[in-house]
Image 1 (cartoon, rainbow, N blue to C red):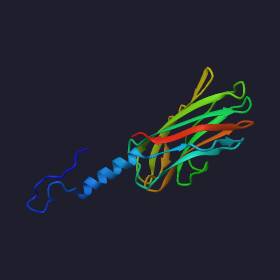
Image 2: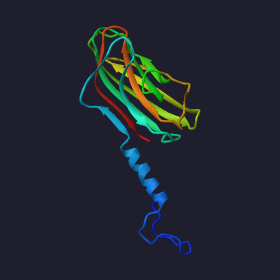
Image 3: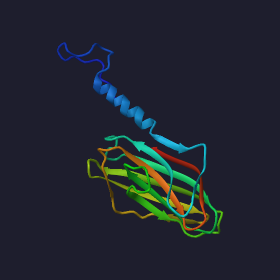
Image 4: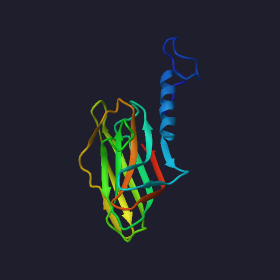
Length: 185
């Protein structure tokens, strides 16, 4: 990033070394991108057979840009031999009622099995009818399951939104021990 601090516009430019408003906006955007993350750091989240919010990241109105990309990670253990359904939602509510950007059902396993789940969500277009697309990969033991999402989801990027990770177990529970949502671009 280049800051304009020393230029001549015929006498109305700031003195050398002073920042102009556009420089402060650029710095603000850079700092916001560096700190736009949230993690599950003090408690575990246990889900039953309905989608339960694990973690969410607040996204202020107009902060999403074409190419904004988010990394979503969670590690969990299921209580019985059950399929876990992982979903990433993007919308204004911050609940499982928000539109699903991507979803994956991991296959049945031996029970009490750890899984590592990672998703990416990218903003494709912005505005009141902006679009996002995402994928989730779920790994358990020797198997991997991917969401194979090919369609975009509509999102109003001009409004406040929340990027939310949720999980549900077909039976029993899913206990999430570690989770992270971070903006990478």
